[in-house]
Image 1 (tube, rainbow, N blue to C red):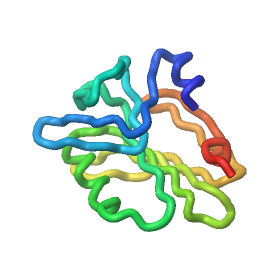
Image 2 (spheres, rainbow, N blue to C red):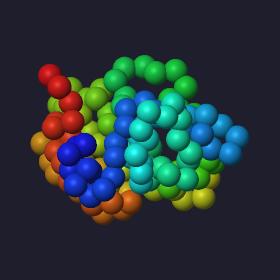
Image 3 (cartoon, rainbow, N blue to C red):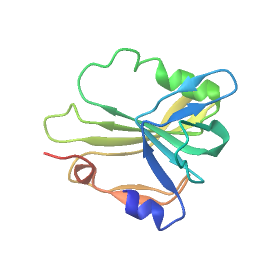
Image 4 (tube, helix red, strand yellow):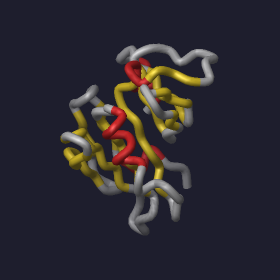
Length: 129
């Protein structure tokens, strides 16, 4: 994933702090328009996409999409590793103060998105055995 994004001039970070106007977020995945460098935090206006990896119970995960939407993040990606048949990948797009799913794929099928950048992958490629 990271190599494919790098070729497009985008950078993916794992668990980097994101500061919005009133909140601090620490998504599992953040795709930025510019380098995060050695900074401990980046401003939300540089974020193209925030994402979470779901593997088992994670307290607070239910409230995160609502908080991300309220902060203005337009795209929210979920890698769901709870399924027995393999991981699923869902891209959500902001619709007012909530998100709606726009692209979905299960393990063994192609996930293809065009916004906020073009990206295609089988969700299985994103996890390690």
